[in-house]
Length: 168
Image (tube, rainbow, N blue to C red):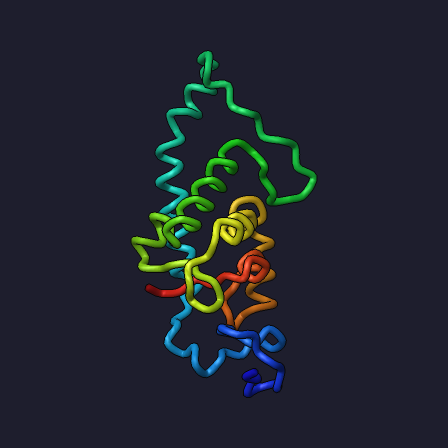
């Protein structure tokens, strides 16, 4: 079994990073991690596209049209956390697009993709875990990721789902 050149920890088969110290495995150098700025722009594109699509529904619900009663935003006792209807739509969007295609529309435009740590296509469970942080806990997810995983450029929920964002 191969070991990490930095800490000597045994590496699982197909590992891109050492699970102990986060050092990039020598054979994985061909994988190019996406920068935080690229990821932010991809996220912003997705938010704008879905915002434009969902705006008419929000207006009709605000006007009180029958059939457009949208679940109100649930009260939150944690700052920066939102469990509203629109966030459920964003969650489904990211889970399905990244789980099926490995990328959302924003990531397609930015030429990024979400993969497992070995660069292979992730499954739907990994996409769901990864999307939870992006939709419901983004500020905590990103800030803790910057602090804990700067070499891997992973958010906390990327780490938990075993995924990374690569430049295509």
